[in-house]
Amino acid sequence: KTEAKYIQYQGLLVSTAAHSWESLEYAQNFPVQHTDVFAVTYPKSGTVWMQEILPLVLNGGDLTPVLTIRNHDRVPWLECKQLAEIVDRLTSPRALVTHLPYSLMPPSFHASKAKVIYVTRDPKDVLVSSYYFHQMAAFLEDPGTFDEFLGKFLEGRVPFGKWTEHVKSWKSAELGDRILFITYEEMVQDLPASIRRISDFLGSNLSDEVIQKIAEHCSFRSMKDNDMSNFSHVSNQYMDTNKSSFLRKGIVGDWKNHFSSEKLVRFVSVMNQELKEESSCLPWSL
Ligand code: A3P
Image 1 (cartoon, protein in one colour):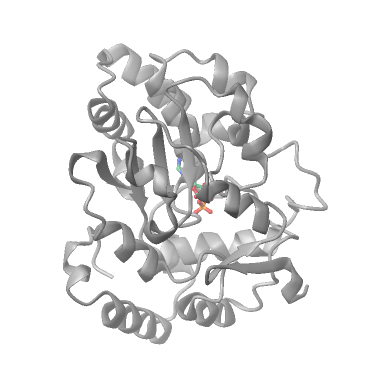
Image 2 (cartoon, rainbow, N blue to C red):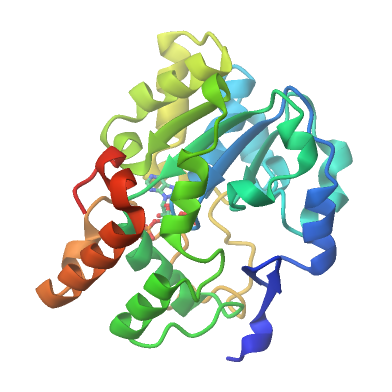
């Protein structure tokens, strides 16, 4: 695997499989609407999960779109090539996802009232999830050993750069009541309560029955069986399911099976150094 798998756009490393200079320019010029909702994540923090939850919350729990439209077509990535092809098919209120840092959001986003749900996940679990994803996805660089990949991750030599920069950029964005911060961990712990938070934030006014139905549909098990969400349509040449699944484990704390105590010390010290005072607002102890 070679460097040509990635390009840099305004300092941001992205894979050429789903991104191009044109797609990133398209994102910069994208006319954001006031009613748009963005789920923003650092990769491997629950993006695909939000692609399942958002359409359901926005349409009163109707399962049709999540059972008939592939996740990247129903809730497209702002920065990916596909958006230009499917944008005309999206109905308002539109839901989109993005891995962009705050500084690369399009000017029309800043001028809009569009809402943001920022999902964070314990970076130790993000690293583990990303490690397996790099093993199975042929369009990403070979991660090498776990220790080698840990070094790359800490240095930001991975698509979308450093986790700390991403989180800091969105935590310091002054978006007031336009932004909701939610964690992967709270979604795992109590999905109905998390969906209730999202629904209240979006003003969806859903009954407990509908919340329950959405939570059941968005469980790890149910999403793993949903061919519109599990990437089963992608050939093994691009995503090798013999190596790992996209919906891999869906748990909190898998890092404990991967970090030596020495690596943990290194990881935590780099994170704390870069996060500085922001580390105290994170929901996990690193
Ligand atoms: P693991 O590799 O730890 O299993 P993203 O969509 O941002 O790429 O994130 C992928 C991670 O989210 C994977 O983590 C995947 O299993 C997890 N995930 C997706 N849907 C989930 C769900 N319904 N419940 C729990 N985890 C989920």
